[in-house]
Image 1 (tube, rainbow, N blue to C red):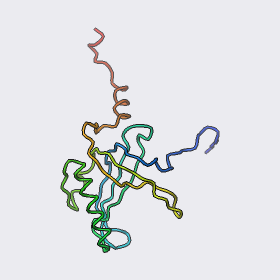
Image 2 (image 1 turned 45 degrees about the horizontal axis):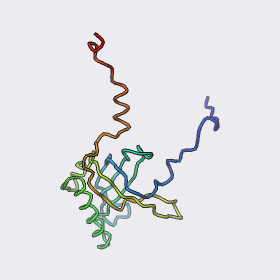
Image 3 (image 1 turned 180 degrees about the vertical axis):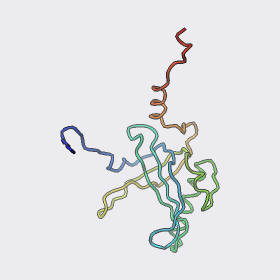
Image 4 (image 1 turned 90 degrees about the vertical axis):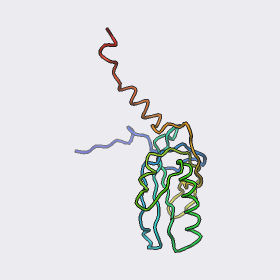
Length: 155
């Protein structure tokens, strides 16, 4: 039997857009797929924030790298170049977008106002993040807390 009491929980603010700014992220998903509209193909990306008060939050981006609208295609290809440069010069094809997975960089986001579907984050810039660990700080801390001392350490 299911029982739920609202006084046991606080509202989840994670559905609100992140504040505009620059965030350290790791690319957790990358794919090349046709657009539902049939107007071309896109590189779809999922980013995970690595540090700070928004650690573990996800951001999504779509780059319409092949598109019937030449301006949309040019802008997306320019952004893809900036993304690849920020990831150390990755060279992509439609079958190698997986090379982006695990790459760490900083992304600049803004809030796009959308009265129909609700405000959302939009990735508008990419920069390299030298020295930023590929393992999120929250995972490194968690892993360290599970490590047991070696049996001989207490001898």
